[in-house]
Length: 363
Image 1 (cartoon, rainbow, N blue to C red):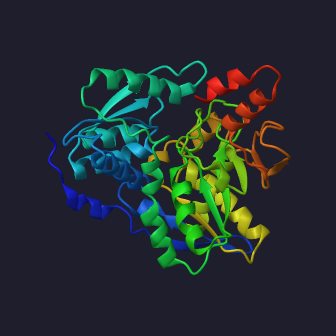
Image 2: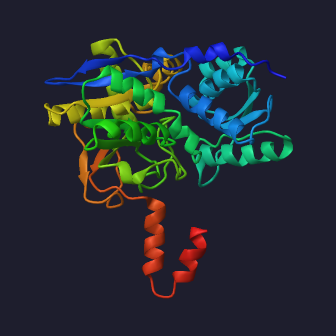
């Protein structure tokens, strides 16, 4: 049985919020890389504590979760703090740096070698996770995509921000599981009820209605539709491509010395755009992690050349009239935000003779 080490929880949170200059303005960024395991340690602790409180997670039980990497770091720390062994279902594209780090932490890895033909690595990992859960009595799956405790884990981040900044008019949030945006919005709108929320997705992600495509960007976007995404919270959505995220990451690092991964680059791009577009608006974003796992990808010239990521990138978003109106390839923006699952149901229910089919799908 893993011995709990609750003192480790002191390593989570308490991160700074710093001004980041743009060409003619600035925005505020919450630097979650200043916390040992990055942003998702907050969600990891919240999900494990919530499950234990409900009796779903027994003392010392094994945690099994699918991850592209970042949540895995959070679960590694949360597992040691709360006394649970952790088994992570990862895939062949997990960076060598993270594999080495998980090995040093004595975190078990089950590596998926082949992507699912339609759901990619994410679906393949979830299918393997189901097999492991069935074979491991007493194991617990946090299910970051659909677990409301994920969003609850960011209440403390919201409280920190309320103490750190005078006002926020616009929140720019990268979207993967949807947890940190939902949790932050809930807290920040208690003080600033007219807060505008801009979601930042990846090109090739299904979350906001674009077609599912293979993505180089990890930790941002999704091949499934997470229920933690609170669609009603959003005022607009942006989709950012890998080339644009690389340019943003490298530009941010060169100008400020702040570096991070795909989510950081995408959020920085859109936050800078929002600050330049409305200089009087006080824009806030979150940089989820630091640069270390991306040194052989985003910050490696050879890797970027091999993936055609160093050419000209978009300097402004293409405007879409609807989330499904056209496929975004570089950087796109839409002021209409819909839940794709609800939209499918609406279309099915409105078609003649399909009411029963739609009702069945809803179940």
